[in-house]
Length: 151
Image (cartoon, rainbow, N blue to C red; front, side, top):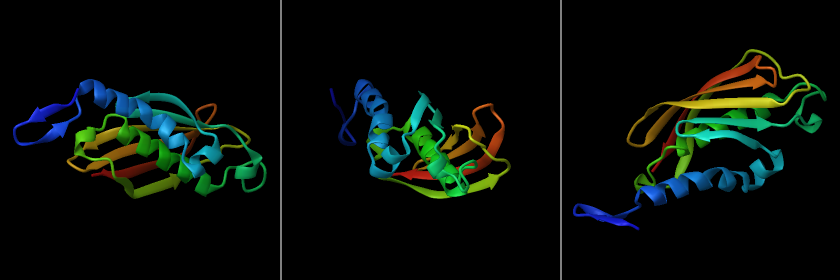
């Protein structure tokens, strides 16, 4: 049931907020690009998300090593999911990545790619997250930081 605040319009209550947050993984995976990647949410908790990309040779440079753009895309998606995972939907639902830096430090050779994101800080509109990509054995492939905006 929506609540009314004297200072503003009706807002979502706690149950409605939880339902909106819970719908995020399925909603993200329905988008055309992400659905083509066949990503799997392994963990989706407030401010912490783990997404797995099952190994596919068609997403590599040579049939063995993931293309850097694929790694960055999964990292960006994982950071965005972390931003939504504890978002107050009364503050808005329009979003985009503002910036993301990625440092490639290894390779996921013929391995699933596992990305882990955690929110470091939430501002009024900006959410700052740290994102790590690794192979299935935990060897780090890339590290990044993301700034995401929801209004």
